[in-house]
Structure formats: structure tokens, C-alpha cells
Length: 412
Image (cartoon, rainbow, N blue to C red):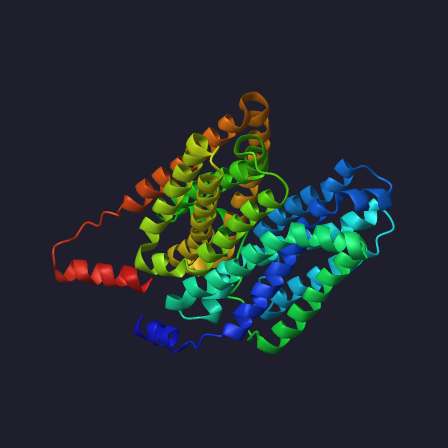
């Protein structure tokens, strides 16, 4: 134990590697959501409907969910350095295929490759952060990566739409491929060798649920990201119909959300270092309260902007916090657990968006926001109960026989 602690303390943070991964992740996120802002020109050029092109996003998400589960398992004997670099190669290759695709089938092949890169990269994120920086700096490393994610999420749609009008949608994907090239070169120069931790089995994906606090933690993760999917998917109709903002004003409100989310992710390391359990419980709670406030005061533009921004701020803490929680809870199974967590998040977003659509058709924006609030409160409640559960240890009498038995068990 003392030797492990000494080694851990002697780890030098490799910030160049962290920033190179942040760039790669940002490129993957931008590429994932670009079709949303380029549906019309893409559909016209390929000779298909906009709804058909929209499947390019669905296919990517579905492949990402599968890849997050199995990438670590299938690459277990490969140096993690080369696995991470391969994700930048996939980013570059997938965007080149999409940019030069003559038909929808070829385009979807490119999107499948992108999904593999997204799922694999996200699934290994927690374990990678633990290898690049000391334990006490993991929240900072994750906040840098998720800060890049926030920026990418904000700029993907408006930048794609703007550039698409001026240089064409194919050139937009070519520019995104350049991000992959830069990330590839940067990672070649900065990523250290990270040998695999050893062989693992498919059963390890499910064995993590036997660990203390994993089940409530994953359940809370599921609910809080479902709350996100329900709320954010239908935020624009609420702002247009209830708050009555349109055009440039609507863009500014969404930009305020993006900026707040960036700051929430970037500075989340401070509350997480203070108390990660309380931070996750309170962040989900305040997300629910913010949505509830929008239901009550959403007609007032200024208050709506403040509440949407606060929601983005707290969600930034959630994004970093649950990944950081994983590194602290199962550090020895971070890759398997990370893959399971990303799959759960993808599933919750898929279910949330679908259930949200049905709710919106039946009960409108109020129904959507009530649904989102209940999910956020459920996440906060489950996390609070899970974190308060303590493992009861029976203390045997301090006899020599008992001490020998305990030492024998610890040695194992």
C-alpha cells in the first residue's frame, strides 16, 4: 500500500496529453452534431429526405452506445496510447468519408466509424485521466476535457450552419477532419505509453454492479441525464412559445446556456474537491429547481435567461462529477465501468428524448418540464440515499487468531 501511494504521488501531470485529448473529444462532438445544422443542403445534395439524413445522427449514437461497452474489452492487449490515437484517426477518416460520400450509404459508413470513435473515447475517459495526472488532479483534468465538450456543443450547430451557407456542407466536414489531423499529431507527441492493465472478460462489465454504491450511482446518472435529454430537447419550443423570444434573442439565450455550461464544467473541480457527494446531490437538485422556476416565471425573459444559465451551470458540474465519481469508486475497473456508464448515459438520453416527445404531444411544455424536474429530483434522491449507505464492519475481538485471519484475507 505504501509503495502504491508513493508511486501515485510521484506521477507528473501530463497536461499536454490532457489538452490533446480534449481537442480530439471536441472534434468528435462537433462532428456528431453537424448534420443537425446541415440537414437541408445534405438532403438536397444526396437526393433524400431530411428525415432520412437525420438518421445519420441516430446511427452514430447507437454505434457509440455499443462501442462504449466493448472497446476496452476488444483492445485490452493494446497500449492505450495507440487506442486513443486511433480515435483521432477515426475522427479524421469518418469526416473525409462523409465529405466525399456520393450517396447516403457511404455517408452512413462514415458515421458508423465516428460512432466507434465517440463511444470508445468516452468509455475510456475516466481511466485515461487517472493515468495522466495524480489522483488529486483528476477533477481538474476532467473539467478541462468537459470544458472542451461544452464549447464544441455550443459552436457545432451555429458554426456548421454559418459555414455551410458560405463554403458548402462538404467543406464543413473537411474542416472537422482537419481537427482530427491536429489532434492526431498532438497526441503522437504528447501521449505517454499506457500499457493495458491486463486481460479482462465480458463478465467484468456486469461485475462492477456488485461493488458498493455502484448501483445507486449508475441509477442516479441515468435519471439526471434523462432529465437533461427531456429538458434540452424541448427548450427551444418553450422559449419561443412561452418566453416569446425569437431570432437573435433566442440565439443569445442558448449562447448564455452554453457559456454557463462551460464555466460549470471548467470550475466544477472546486465543489467536487470540497465534497463530491454533496456536489452531485445538490447539482441535480438545483437542476430540478431551475426547471420548476421556468414553469413559474418563464414568461419573463430576464428570469428565463438566468434560470436557463443556472441549469447549464449545474449540468456542467454533473457532467464532470459523475465521471470523477467513477474514478474514485472503481479505480481498478475504470475502463469497464466507464464503458458501462457511457452506455447508460446514451440509453437515458435516447429514452428521455423519445419519452419527452410523447409527453410534449400530450401535455405540452409544462408536461415536459414536470417530467424533467421529477427525473432530476429522482437523481438527487437516489444519489443522497446511495451515498449515505455505509458498509457495516463487524470488529472481532483482538485475539491473535482473529488478527491472523484478517491479515490473511487482506493479503489475498
